[in-house]
Amino acid sequence: MKRKFLLYLCLATLTQCSKCKNDPTPADPAAQLPPATQTGANTFGCLVNGQPYTPGGGSNGTPSYAVIYDPGYQGGSLDVRTYRYPDAQSLKKQRLSLGGININHAGVYLIGASPDTGAGFTDEYRTSPCDTYRSDQANGYSKGSITITRLDLQAGIISGTFAFTLAQPGCDTIKVTQGRFDKKL
Image 1 (cartoon, rainbow, N blue to C red):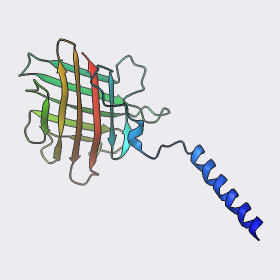
Image 2 (cartoon, rainbow, N blue to C red):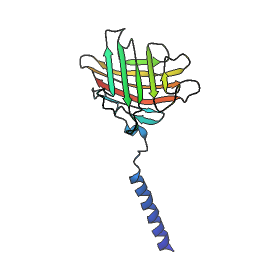
Image 3 (cartoon, rainbow, N blue to C red):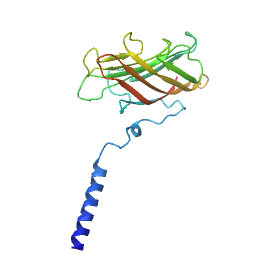
Image 4 (cartoon, one colour):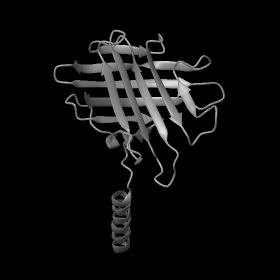
């Protein structure tokens, strides 16, 4: 009886270990994001409704991640744009953007509190009107922030973190968390 019990215990342990090794998805989706750096590493990542989002795909010559910062336009203008093709077999893409004006130093800039700072998310896998969310939509809801952690014009580096929620009547809510970007200008 003891032998059978030990045999079953070993078999159960081996089954559990092989299951862990074969699971391609890490337990923590944030582990699939690039680290939050301030070195001009040219990285971007966030969680969209708990799922990892990083730019990529496409071969039309358009970069899937761009940051434009103009210190002389409207007190400092920031525009972060990304896109990705979640399914390599499809031509449908997702786009995420954020930015604003009067961004001229490291600090927190609120999304939804004024028209100066905003965010947007487009998902071509969804049907209209639930495929496009923007913080400036009249009937929508937006709340969040962009935190500029480094704005160094001499070194040509802008880095930050962000999180926001976008919602509109009759559509699912888009919740973006653990966002980070780091770009060499």
